[in-house]
Image (tube, rainbow, N blue to C red; front, side, top):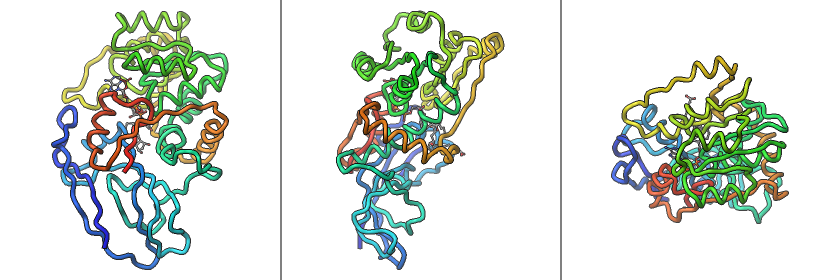
Amino acid sequence: MVTAKVWVLKKHFEGFPKPSDFEMKQVALANLKDGELLLESVFLSVDPYMRPYSKRDMKEGDVMIGTQVARIVESKNPAFAVGTFVVANRGWRTHFISDGKDLNLLPAGWPESLPKSLALGTVGMPGLTAYVGLFEICKMKPGETVLVNAAAGAVGSVVGQLAKIGGCKVVGCAGSDSKVAYLKNIGFDEAFNYKTVASLDEALRKASPDGYDCFFDNVGGEFASIAINHMKKFGRIAVCGAISQYNDSVPQKGPYIQIPMIFNELSMKGFIVSSWHNHREEGVKALLKWVLEGKLKYHEQVTERFENMPAAFIGMLKGENLGKAVVKV
Ligand SMILES: NC(=O)C1=CN([C@@H]2O[C@H](COP(=O)(O)OP(=O)(O)OC[C@H]3O[C@@H](n4cnc5c(N)ncnc54)[C@H](OP(=O)(O)O)[C@@H]3O)[C@@H](O)[C@H]2O)C=CC1
Ligand SMILES: CCCCCC(=O)/C=C/[C@@H]1[C@@H](C/C=C\CCCC(=O)O)[C@@H](O)C[C@H]1O
């Protein structure tokens, strides 16, 4: 019999999550029935959405939700061989049983040399978010100027590079000087540290005096309120995330966006990448190709050991990650 370790939400988060809000438990798994598989998580993803999702959709005692790259260690299902790696959405668990219906194989053509953890990042859900947000929501065109915040993270770093591949000028911001240096290194035209600039308004104007055609917003709050005043006529805003608000106990207040939206005839659209599953195959294929061609660079913040899941999650929310935050079990 196999015993799985799982992390549960012990206490609903108040403000920033803290280690005592989580509890690790042991769960005995049943013996496999015909058609079932036993899997072990190899890499687990920690993502910002887990914070607002827990408040709206979870109760205390629930296993933390999330995605993993897992390896099949025992199979009573002839469609799945032992040793196969898959992407699953089974939460913060070391081991789990599946009937195979909820598993996705790694994309075709995945070379042995490429880290499988990228299926949780640049060639996974965050990369696809960048792809859908830029091409389908912003409808980015060559020659335009694109602004992205949380630019050194999993989604933002792909946004900037895809915009460069698409022939745009790219401006990004991030929360440390080393992140800003990384952005320049991967091809951003302009980058600044939003925590240390004297004025966000000035920094945005200096980076692109003519304004922005597309704004890929991962952050919301104050930054978005200022950036909206720098949009060009008919600019498009992809509302991807609002991480500056996820840990707020008291909702932030305006300034409000209607006046600049009207004057500049802006379009603003929120999206959830999983609703765009009809673009998944095409998007993942393109991302993998760009990675293999060396046009799309990646960095991962790998935390070792399942026991450190809460620390990796809290660290990511605090901005300690460069690129995609994952845990190596
Ligand atoms: N709509 C969708 O379907 C999806 C949306 N998202 C959203 O995209 C955004 C980025 O996600 P992801 O790339 O996975 O995460 P990241 O890898 O970018 O990690 C989160 C980053 O957010 C930044 N951050 C944290 N707090 C603040 C703050 N108060 N103000 C500004 N920046 C902050 C930190 O970077 P820094 O050091 O720069 O502050 C941190 O590293 C999130 O808002 C997420 O919810 C992600 C996936 C799918
Ligand atoms: C809940 C706020 C989500 C913030 C944006 C984000 O990071 C989205 C990530 C999605 C995530 C969606 C999780 C919950 C939203 C539920 C919406 C619904 O259908 O009711 C998950 O699907 C992976 C990312 O696509």
